[in-house]
Length: 194
Image (cartoon, rainbow, N blue to C red; front, side):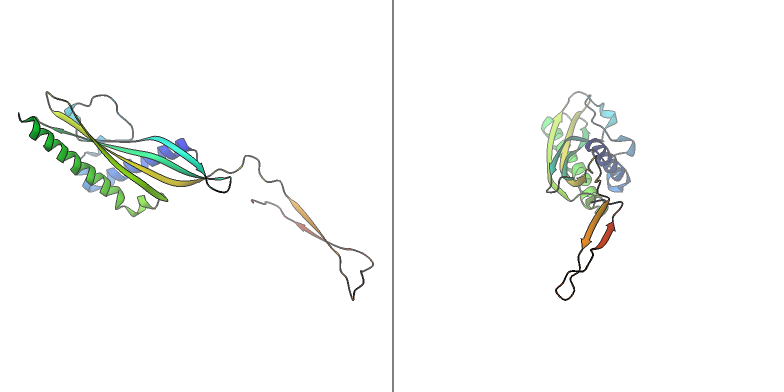
């Protein structure tokens, strides 16, 4: 499977797991958990919301030529809103608290799921970033969770091995003298994979 398909499969798997996690859906309706990155301004009425996307992939050769460590950067953006109360500082604090709570629920849903954890050899780094924005009808904010997830990919050579036959010649020596003729032994190997 190529890197593009790996990224797509990782995103879709995370979306499916988040939609199935009751702790997550208690905070975000399943219809607002997306396998995409939405870059437009989101109306307050459509929050809270989760966006799952991948931003980059790195492939590093591991020893043998056909094995690669594949590292994806997986992001989950947790969007929340706060209705203005007239106290901007309190509104920001409340919004930041909501974002922290939502991000904690999302992270916990994945990191306590043994099936999710078994998909990857390493979940190396988890980072979070909080951004507050907006005014007027409500403050918007997001907490972006970022994960480095690693697995091994195998790329079989385009040209298959073409070794089909090995011939072994055996000469017998009895009592220190060579026999009158050679004894031929033949080993035929077909369907060799390695």
